[in-house]
View 1: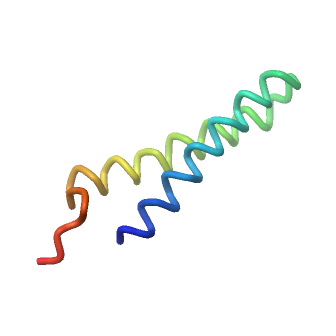
View 2 (view 1 turned 90 degrees about the vertical axis):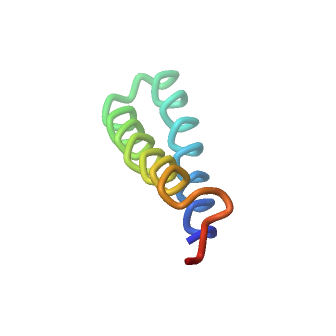
Amino acid sequence: MNILMVIFGLVAILSVIGTVQGFKERNLLSIVFNVAAAVIFGGFTIATIVFQGYPPTLH
């Protein structure tokens, strides 16, 4: 679960970067999908840290 949390966190960070680029290019579809990805994957990352701790407990 620890590696999955890192991957979700990286996807959330990259989607925030994509959102900024979408604003620069004024691309509405890019902004919508990047914001949705940032919220979803960021939420998964935060929920994993809150409920399992960091580093995650195994038992």
